[in-house]
Amino acid sequence: MEAKPFRWGGVWALGFGMLGVSLLWQLYDVYLPLFLQSGRPDFGRGAGTPGFGLGTTATGFIMTLDNLAALLILPTVGVLSDRLRGRGRWGRRKPFLLVGAPVAALAFAALPFTVGGPLVVFIALAGIVLLAMDLFRTPLTALLPDLAPDGRRSPASGVLSLMGGIGGVLAFAIGGALFRVSPAAPFAFGAAGMLAGVAVVLLLVREPAPPAGRPAEVPGVVENLRALVRDRDRSAFLLLGAIFTWSLGVSTLPVFFPSFTVKEFGLDSGQATQLMAFFGLAIVAGSVPAGLLGARLGRRAAILTGLVLLIGLVGSIYAVQSLPLLRGLLVAMGLCWSLVIVNALPMALEFAPPARSGAHTGLFFLATQLAACVGPTAAGAVLQMAGTNYRYLFLYVPCTMVLACGMMLGVRGRGQGARAPAKVPAATVAPAEAAP
Image (tube, rainbow, N blue to C red; front, side, top):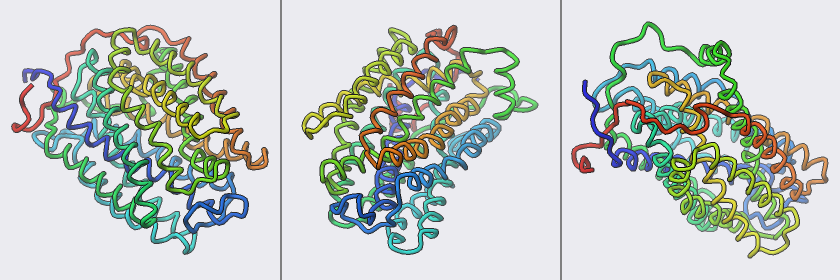
């Protein structure tokens, strides 16, 4: 079957799915730690919500429980979506969206109604949200290499990060305002927004046909890791290590940054959430330029530049006493973070054969989820030892980025951002948006 020409319409349609997922995910990451810690005597009386009164170590541990399951689910689902030989409108990725998205939305909307009840019920419902999200996150992200050949992936990833950033801004700005109306309102907003974004993907993105000829077996996650070992692909391992290490730090920011502003600046939960909109807006502004820079200068150079700048910016928050200065630092951090996150997945996919893009997307998520398991618990323990001084968070995070920089310096070969176009069939959108 002849490959159809690449069209940006499919990438933008996929971006709406990323917007919806980011909207729900940011609301989850911001409000669950606030619910878990609110009610603790030293936390902040202006939090504006009842809660369970837990400490930082317990909160960090609970926030990592979902990631333990995701370690197995995300890579496994990626492999399963590679093996599925769906054709036509539904393809091999969309069936996972059809099942997971509605379940996640319903459970997420119900979550705030369990606050004040037994903690085990709250955690169980949060687990349903996360398991359902894990069912379709990897197939959704794996549509990127389905839609775009290698030479287009950094700019295409920039579009997806742009849309994801818009989702984050909506979560922080509108979600924060809705929280003042009712703690349940942001959750209903996030559930509806995620469903709407996934619906755009289901209706408008038409997947390409799977690679010609059914292989005897699509290797699983363990086999892909073994293949890297057999090939002695040092750069691939260093890249996965760098992704793990910087995620070790970044995964703690949504968990404890709102708590930092509640305690240190006296903000309520809605104001703390809205403050994060400055970070999200900067990601929106920086995503497309970051993708273009990655394509022009090389993904490795773009990622290293972003990490080095972030080390200084995040570390400087340790001494910040002014809200206007904090807002400015959040903007600068968002611009630098876009250099990293926009180019990370396309760089990881350079090591993936087209037939195994889902499996390698799963390896990318394996690194990030493993870090998300360890990061918040480790940061919570550091904060607990520091007498719940949230400022120590901004010493912990730069240390993880220094380690990531060291690993990135060792990445060579394909991982530097080679731009040779891959002959991957590009997906198209539905006929109504088929124009270039």
